[in-house]
Image (cartoon, rainbow, N blue to C red; front, side):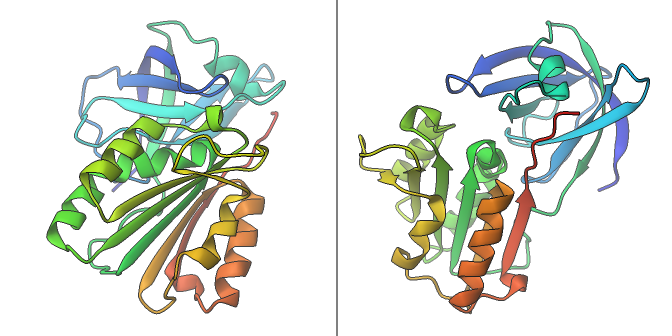
Length: 247
């Protein structure tokens, strides 16, 4: 899928958590925007220096919403992109390029277990994948999907209602929220600790399972090390790192 530059119009924002916002856009030319779940778009943001600064965000909506682009964004203190995106008004225009990214569910791959691991807004591409995962779970009754989302506290969990509803519909889909700063769980799907602490309890099979990692680079690096220690090759691990930058 080729990248192309286009303009988007800001529609509205919704607070997903006390700090994380979902921003919704549509193409100004009203053309459909085909993308593969797991891919991202890149905003080309004007800097005071006169330079154009790119900032990339995974798409959180389904590709079936053909002229809609939703992203989840967490504020960065004194962040350049934060200042622009959190102050958008309805009708504001931005230049974009995309889609891009390889954190996708390959059609030819037939794992027995998808393990989807994220921290914070890194869970956005997995929400986009839900319709595709539904198709695969319906086609293969033995397929298992586990989604792990790591945040600080329970109120930081993004899209939790969507994932719980999906788990209620598909018995082979399991959602866990890991709380790194909390001292106790307040719901059955919650666990105290870092998200990568879950691996030992999941009965993973390095020969048949595929792992997806998205979010904090420290989580990703530590997860890869742990996964390799239990036999996973890099070919069985997909990853997308989120790095916070101020300029």
